[in-house]
Image 1 (cartoon, helix red, strand yellow):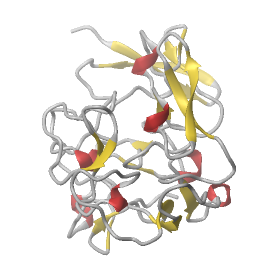
Image 2 (cartoon, rainbow, N blue to C red):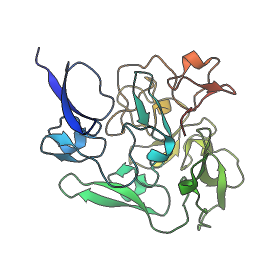
Image 3 (cartoon, one colour):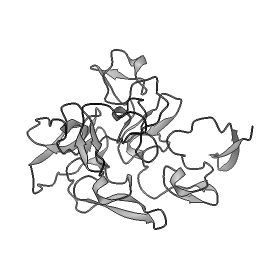
Amino acid sequence: MALASLLVVLAGCRVTIELDPETSLGACHPVGSVCAMPTECCTAACDGGFCVALDGCLPAGESCAAGADCCSHVCASDGEGRVLCQQLGGCRVAGELCAEDRECCGGATCAAIDSATGIGRCALGAVCGGAGEVCRASGDPAAMRECCAGLGPRIQCRAGDVRGVDRCLVASGECAPEGESCAAPSDCCAGRCVPDALGVLACRVACSSGAGRCTSDADCCSGACGLGAHCESTPRTCSALAEACQDSAECCSGLCEDDVCGSPLF
């Protein structure tokens, strides 16, 4: 069986590690991994056959040491031996990869980084954050941001779905039923804010089956939201961030706090 190579930087030098192609590297390949095209990389940047880093915060799927490294401000174990930046559910916050403006949280635009693939990064159009944007994260001053007034329902900085990360959400705190528009899982009574067939975010009660659309692991019946925002078919044996739990051993992150899987790294 042929083996693929993973390039890792150790103490300033490059080491090539042979990997079984059947081994999962997660939904995307981190910086230093071999790649044939940009879409294989968590950064959507493939140069000279290897995934390369982008300036600024790390997008979801990239290896991290602390929440402050990540665009989502959440760094946690995926339950498979990797510590990665995690995707927040619903709209994509500033710095995360995107293909079009509507994938980004309110007021942000998808600024192209690769004209060939059409992949970009969500970029804030103002200092304040629109609906769904991160406005505060535990121990991370860089995450402090005022929420924009907006033209629709008034929003404010409120507790989000992942403990320790607050997002700009509807001030009333009333949850929306199936089919209503949303920016984050917290907006929905069932806790799922998923793109519909047209790519518009809407509240959904049932988990996405097969290769259905998703914005976070918790959206999928398999417990794994993969590359291209579609569910992976192989079920994950542990519970995703923000899912209900009774014991820390049930959570991919290894932390169950107040009956919810949380992130131990900020």
